[in-house]
Length: 277
Image (cartoon, rainbow, N blue to C red):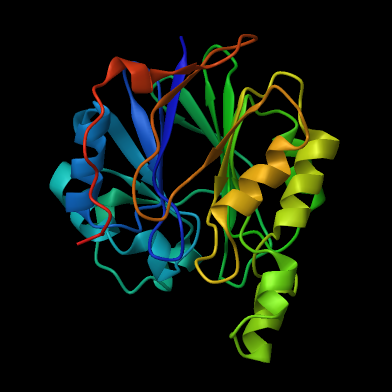
């Protein structure tokens, strides 16, 4: 059974990632409104009622702003650590909140979701790997201060991944941000640079990785063309996709030991809304 993936939005204005099979799916983070989640999934031909759970990586607003409404409307369980939930300042029914840890995978239908801790300036941040019953694994690796041993290990297992490529070092250092913020971004608990993400990709990409969706690009300290050119220069047969901060990506079908199929051809091209509101 294949796995289908899409970025519904990726950036400091909101993050939301879809991973599922033919029968069920999960969202990792809901940093855009429920209305936008619905609209973007409809444009992609994805069914909201196939979503079985939401997994939250950390409490920053761009990862949770649409969580409460989406979870309430569709009566979805929210997997979140207790420490993260206490720092969200959002309201959920007690029976909707399910805590997880980084030891035991969570089963959602035929999907298995494994969490591991990451380096980021949040209370209890985690990354996720979503695996199918047929052994296909998809990583969601954003908001990462540095490429730690855990990240490298899990990246090597992935048939596809959402990987942060947040900033270009030169653009950040020559940009308008105050010095303390520049240090926060690049200081080991902030975000991955293009160079760090590229090094992870070139040194640890498994041969069976068919798609890499580069995510959480900075509006002020990065350029999509710069990222695309850097990663495409490697010459690998992994399909490189830049996840937009304004709209959804196509849906990609991931198959074990084969190259992925872009499902965009299955849907007519439609105009997309370039604003969150």
